[in-house]
Structures are given as structure tokens and as C-alpha cells.
Length: 324
Image 1 (cartoon, helix red, strand yellow):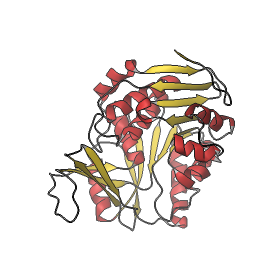
Image 2 (cartoon, helix red, strand yellow):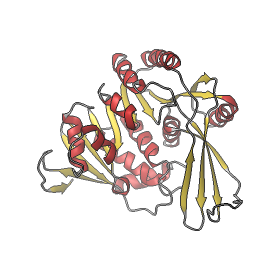
Image 3 (cartoon, one colour):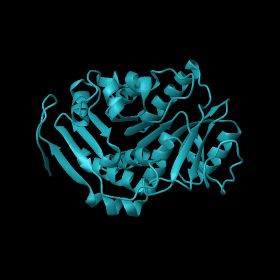
């Protein structure tokens, strides 16, 4: 298995609880809260561990919240390098409303990271990648103050060191990083549209192809929610459709997808097979509540229920599709 390094610059101490119903101007009596060490890369590492793999996590933490986060994360047994920050690690609060079954998420912005500190973090990450060549997963938002080109710089340094960057972020950080051609980008339909520009009604299959043709990455994965995902490479696009499951919460599905995907890739599986494994992990995650991730038994059961649909049209014309 090739090494996997996950990078979380803006982690969050996730707190999840239940309330009977959300009502304004009233005290809402909550159930006993559940705490998790969260944030994109951290969740990816947790998913990999659940699936029987191992990764190394790089996490920036600060303050009393950061100390609580670190204590929780140590219990997972995942090897981690902690980058100390002076400001407080953020909180993320999820209230599950019993009346509707819907999650309500409140996410704080996080500590400020200066340009100088971001550069020091990148220097350290480059050193790790050179010693630990394999897959690097950059997932989640950037902390306030972090230069927008942080992930772009990480993409260059990872490639120079012989690694492959898998990127799952959004907004200007995504746009800047895409200019440096990371190995793989996972994004949703809207984010894909923002990258390639033009008409807003193009199908996800077309957008995924355009990401490859435009030189944004070697592998483009456009998430389709309950419909699965589109995976595009120079060989063309395929659609991975998930099994039918009962959805409880979509929280954690994306990180579970990425965790399963990179775990499979690191074990030498093809991108098609790895994406199927990722879709199975996402399907497992949506059957759990709030910040819980995929469960290994579910993933193994759901994987053979995923379906591959091969696209038989080019990026500019509609056409037929065939299951394969």
C-alpha cells in the first residue's frame, strides 16, 4: 500500500446533539452531545482507518479547543503531526431536529493563519511528502487569512516531490489549485461549472470531460449526490451509480467517498474500481447520523451493488449511454 498523507488546515471540533424541534426565542433542551475530531482531511483519515487502512494526518490546532480535539483524535490511533497555532481551533455544531429528521449545521470560521505561517506549513508538508511519497489528500476549507494559493502551492510541491495530490475543496482555493493541475479533483456540479465557465445547463458528464480537456487535473470526479458520481479521465467519462439506501444525513458522505477512493488507489486498484468503492462508502455514510462516517461492513456490502454506466458521447454532443 502506498503512503497516504491527509492535510487539514482548518479542522473543527464537531459537536452533535438532538433537539425535539427548532424554535426561535426559546431554550432548546438538547440531548447529551457527541464529540468528534472533524474537518476534511481528518475525516478522510478516520474513514481510511475504518476501512482497514492507515494514513498519516497533518493537522493545524490551537487553543483549548485544539487540545480537546487532539485528545479525541489520539484515541483513533491515527498517526498525526500537529502544527501548533496561537489562535483557537473552531467548533462545528450540528443539531438534529427530531420532528423533521433534518440536520442543522453551524460552522464557525476558524483561526487566522498568516501568509508567513502558511509558508512555514508548506515547507514542512513538502519535507514530509519527500520522505513519504504517495498520495496527499488536501480536503476542506482554508482558515481565515491563509493565502488563496495555498493548495496550488501544495500541488506543485507534491508533484515535484513525486506524490499525487487529491483535492477536495471549493471556491477561490479550488480555482487557484486547478491552475496547477493536481492529480485528482473532486467537486460538485456547481463548482465544476464555475471552473470551466460558459453555459450553466451543461450536464455533469460534459463538465467532467471539460475539466480533463482543459488541463485542470488528470482525474475529475463530479459528485451527483444520491445519484453517485461522474469520473472522467483522458479515456472518457463513466458514471458510478450507488445502491438504494435509506438516507439519514448527508454529512460525512463526501469525506467517506474520498477516504475510500484514496485507500483503494493506494492499494493498486483502478480509478474505476476505486470510485465504485468511494460511492459505496458515501452510501454507507448517508445511512448514519450527522458527523458519523462510513462503516466497513456496509461498504463491503454496498460495493458490489454499485453500477458503472459508460458514456458514449463526446463533450459537445448528447448521445446514448450503456451500462457496463
